Length: 340
Image (tube, rainbow, N blue to C red):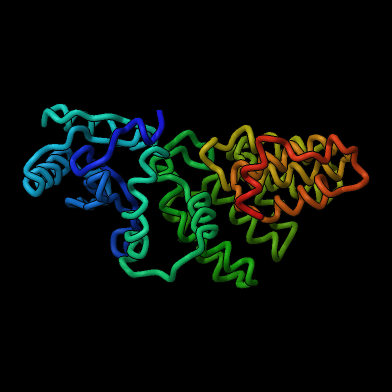
C-alpha cells in the first residue's frame, strides 16, 4: 500500500479520525481527536479529554461532521497505531461507515497541514516560537508516545508508567547540566512523589550527582541495579563509566544490554546508545562494528549531526582504513542527505 492507493481526489472521498496530544498547564497531557477531510484538510470538529474520550463523544463529533457535510465519506481512515483503534472502528461499524486502518505514515501527508497549524497550541495553550524541521524531528524522537511502551522497559505503556514524571525529570536534567544541584534535586523529588522510587528515578538522581559527586553517583547506580538490573538507562550509564575506565569490552556489553532492553520505539535513546557503542568499538580498533553501530544510530535519528561527524571523520574520510570499509553503506545514503 502507498498513499495513492487510498484514491483521494475530492472532498468526502475520505475522512480521517486523527489523534494529537497537547500539554495544558491545568490538566497536563491531553488527547485531542479531530475529524478531517483528507482532500481539503478541513477540520469538522474535535474532542479533548485527559484520558481517551468515550465512544459517545467520538460518535458525537462524527455526527456533527455528518451534519456539516450532509453526507458520510466513502471511507474513514484510522491509524493502525491509534491506541483507540478497536473502539474507533467499532463506532464506524455502528454508524455504517466504511473504514480502513492504515499505517500512520500513509496518513502523514494528509494530516500535516493540520499538525503544522496546531503545533503552536500544543504546549500550555500558547503559541510557541517556530522550530526548525530538524528541531521538530529531534523533539518528536525525544518525547515518548503516550500509549507506546515506556522507555524504562517496565513493559507498561508510557502513560501508565513514567509519563507523570517526564516534566520534572527534564527540568532536573537541565538544571544539573547548568550546575543548579539543589533545584535539580527538588525537581527529582517531585518526580519521585509522582511515580515512586523506581529504577528510572534513581538513575536520574545518579545523572544529577555525576555532575557533583562521583561516589554518590555510583552508589545510586548500584541502588538502581537492585531495583532493575535490566534497566536500559542504567546500563547506558554503566557503559559510560566503563568507557571512562577504558574498559571498552565491558562498555560494549553494557551498551548492547541497553539496546536489547530499550523498546524499538525509543528512537532517541537507541540513537544515543548506538552512537556510544560505536565509540566503544572504535576505541577497541573494531572499525567495522563502529561503522555498523554509527550507521544504525543514524537510522534511528537521521538529524543527528554528531553521528554524521563520527561517520565521516572516523570512517568515510579516514585514510588509514581500507577503501571497502570507507564506502558509505547503500541503505544509509538517503539518511545522510538529510544532514548534508
